[in-house]
Image (tube, rainbow, N blue to C red; front, side):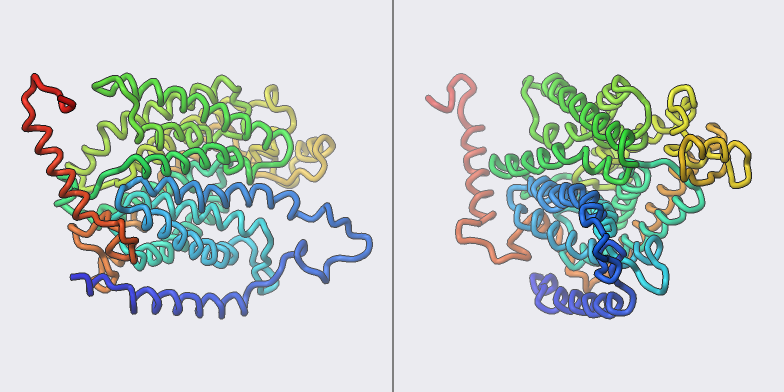
Length: 483
């Protein structure tokens, strides 16, 4: 059985083949953008005006979220810490390489070349975040070969969806609620639907946490929490828009965190805190403010959105996740539907409401920068008037608030449909026999794919715990364990 999951041939062949293909493509199509090209610089060029100084701080923050935040957060299983962190590392590194190339063809391709700068890497990391969120749905049940294949297939589907939604539907989605969180969630659910394992619905002996693994996972939560304002604001307009995005994200995160502690204690039968709630539910506010994060929604609205997202996420973990596993054949291992799906739908609704309520009285002339689709089209006399107030204002589509709200709604349904179909098709590819998929009994176990240290023995640990549990149950009720 273990030979069926051996990585000795499968993983090297897949990686070397992909790296050779990418090396050829990078050689043929990738060059520097103007800010990284020595030919474009001269004695009068001010190096401090280079876009690197504007984009790199956000890139660095998102780097921490991707490699440290997600990595630690996914290491919450007691016997799956190596896999949770290391497979995250492998998948993320590959996804960023691949996304830089694939997104480049849609966003940065001209003169027959993809022009690469720090902004490309930042966009690629958002695409990488999509893959890692989807990974959460199949955590513990997949091999590294399957995860690389998932990234290989998900990135193009995401890039096409992103391009189509932004170019043709034209929406406001500064925090990536629709194109990151909703896409990643329903793609991951599509994959796990196909990879359904009936025996895991009744639980698994190794599907447990430990004191140390829970601490490590909370560290991942803290890294994500601290850097989430950078994630939500990285691609917003510089200035007041970005300022609002940072404020709203922090307010939403803080309100969801406080609410999570209250709900965790309230609904625990013994009135105690549950670590799973602290690790996941506290982050809900970062997603819920995403669709309206750069808009004039008011700090109070951001506060309320954090509470709403946290509440939906909490009850989703408690009731919806078990229901989906039993009734819908969707085993959402990390509850991504709660943290990214339910909160994403709330956020999208809030964004639509904010668009409907947006007026010149509230925003001033900058209304047509934030909601560029509402700017008058080329040739409209009002566009000339606005350009006197906002030099360089680009022509828009002349949409009304109601029209834009309908386009936002269309983008939500289109994104969910595209991601779900893509996830199902990807799941069928990942299910092929040569993908080194672990057996049911080998799920959630590092030993299947790693040379583990001598102090790692799941069999002995689980056997000792069973013996201790049987002994504790044999103690008469009127006698304590200490006695």
